[in-house]
Length: 151
Image (cartoon, rainbow, N blue to C red; front, side, top):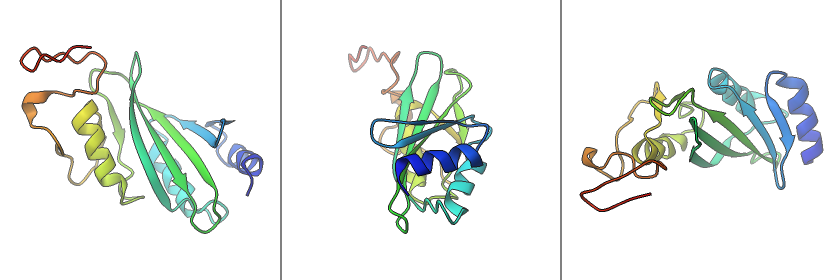
């Protein structure tokens, strides 16, 4: 499926989502509430079959946090980007997609550790690299006077 065909199919199937053609991939933005169900559909629908999550990135926006998922269908050889934002920065949370794509389990732990994004229903959400004394060093407002880290 070409990017244009993929964009058209996604637009018809996911009417609540914002879908656009990015510079390289089709990009779909969904609400936090719709994230998990959308992820399930992207994997299960035969025409899409996005069975491989090859990158999950946490993003620190001014008002909230976000996650960007890069997905590929091994069968169909098409790629897309799925995006979702949290409600706020104070207690950022999204539903886990680790039950949809097992690789998300460790990517989500990394985003939790470094950005403080909580993933609801994650089976093993704990810090991966740092101990609790660090806070979340990839946040734009992170300051650590002990280790002299400033933004």
